[in-house]
Image (cartoon, rainbow, N blue to C red; front, side, top):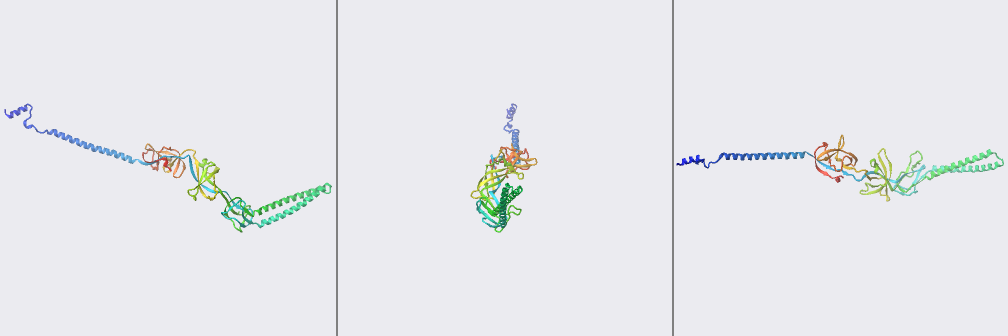
Length: 406
């Protein structure tokens, strides 16, 4: 049997022709390559789409984060149980008085000048009053005349009363004698009063210090015309004397602090001429009444000044520690929002703004007392924008502790 016949038999017996053995299966490989290519393309497309979706999500999150308003917050500070208030005070001597003349005349001589320390009863000046001297002399002469007439009337009265017993004179004569005596006695008393008056006026020629102190002013000189303080003419205050051993400091306390002011409190004084130094005083009395014009309570603080360090008439800052009746909170003034509906502050709660109404108390300049509306745990926005509204989301970038509020 030939070779060709055998090959055909093999074909009939499911054998491949000899010339097809080892030929590549091209359709299968083509589909496999195509599938691999499609998978690769799909992988690349999916990776690109996923990266873009992720980038877009990240960008959206970052944009939303950036879009949030960045704010700084502060927590309210609790006030101390006592509050120090600083008020202006006028330093005055414990006793001060202008020295006037009580008689008219010309100044003959003065013995003290400004700054002189004088003792009580010390002679300050002498006034020359020739008219008063003459009036005193005339009054004394009138008194002598009245006394002589009274003596004669007394003798006449005694004589007539003796003659009446023997019926030598009538009762009318006796009554006339008694009346004359009484009239002359009244004249003597009047003339004696006139002498005393002019004697007192003459004694006013000498000016004496009414108390121990320092002469703070001298408003006269030798030869000046002196008008007494008892007539309608212009009065001349010859000297001013002050007693600086103890000083009175008068302070006007605002009405809102008046309930915390009690007699016996201590007060510290600071003066510009004594930097870094304080002088302690004591509150000794109050007016117990609010001035209807200034709405203040006048108080007096006494300060010992034995060495005369403090000068009368000085301006002082008086530091008073006033107890608080109730604990309140303090916020910086730059947290306030002035709205038409009233005073507001922005409080951050769960990342959102809540505009809260507050009631202000005392204004301390850069700080303000808040009576109601916030709590010590609230986070209050500092320098809030005018566009801030309730419900707005914000991002806290800085938080200030209550102790950091000065």
